[in-house]
Length: 413
Image (cartoon, rainbow, N blue to C red):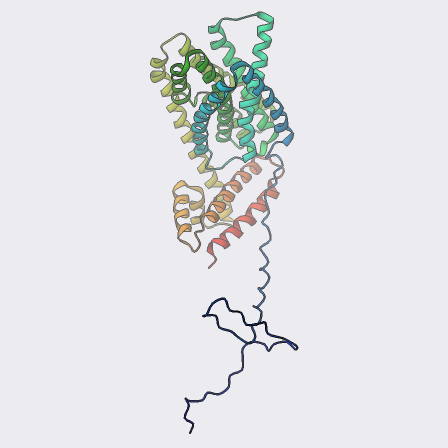
């Protein structure tokens, strides 16, 4: 019996032996607590990352976007507009007007975003709508006004405000909405889309026009006049231009939902533009000939409230249409009835997002993707039923594949 402690059987080292000819490095320890070892094997090599899932198919963008060349053309017009504002207002007044004009533009954009939440429009089309209103429509209006001045001289301010401005401005703004329908018909599904595009074009136009009004007010009356102009145009009536052109968009959207032909959309847009011109003339007339604030609260505000109520009704109709189309897929086994309720009703979407937030890793992004693809799928089927989308079959296949993969990811544990 030895006098030392208990002996244990020899345990083999879990590390591989040092290679032949290995010479240990000189013992240099970074601290007294470092534990030297005769051989420090390399760390195991990390495995290659697991192969990612194949990228999910995307619906084709054909018929749902505009050419980058159009943005290039708008860029050239923008350069000319910048030169005009610097020449007419000066750099300081132009910059002040620009900064202040961003406020009502932001207000309108956030309002349009609320309208567009059910089935968001492609970002490039949103950008084009705003850019057309802010650049092309303003530039064409200025050219037309200059031509009239050269031909007929200075005109009555009242005539220009009540007749010329509404007529010319709404024609050029309405042309932008019609161009979106013409170039991206597969993203123009109905009245709500028309209202969104029309409001965005109008918001862009008001943005550039506000730069001019705010700059002139600063030059002519200083801070006091600028404040009054900003309150009237930027805070009391930021939605005015958006509401006017939305009437044109609504009419084109009705044609898109019913027929989808270019001739039908042009005729409906012309009729809608008449309504936009009348609303615009009424607005300008109240500021020119009558008590603006009196008519603002007795006429303009009720019209705006009616406009909002109309949008709410259209949104509900859009939700019912989405639910009806998805129910057809549910009958074919692609969705469950409970999923249709979750995907196609506002309350169901709210519950679905709350449920996804409680899953491991917070899967709300997946749920948002599931909702977006299902909503797009319903719109694709509606276009296919009306026979106005030759690419609907490919988009339907892609969206069904995406929806099934997203559901599997949502339920994976």
